[in-house]
Image 1: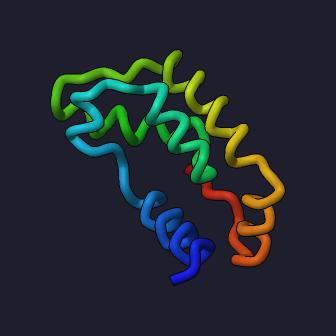
Image 2: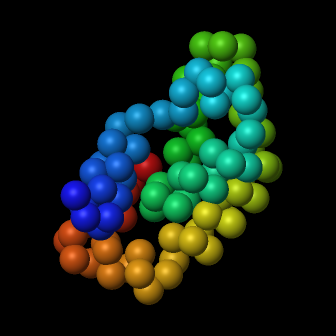
Length: 95
């Protein structure tokens, strides 16, 4: 499978998947924000993670998530990623 195709399917799966229990317990909100931005997900994705993590009595850190998201955008907003989104004819995710 080509890298572009693998990234495409991973991106689709992330649109429907929130953070895992392990990630909630780890509490690395910077990493979560960076990962979400890298895959083109908007900052409001944190609300999905919040709903998931509240089941484990864990509240996300929106400041760290936001900082991570800004770093992830630096990786997302590249010519290569733009090309990928263009050739797959995919719009940016809503969440």
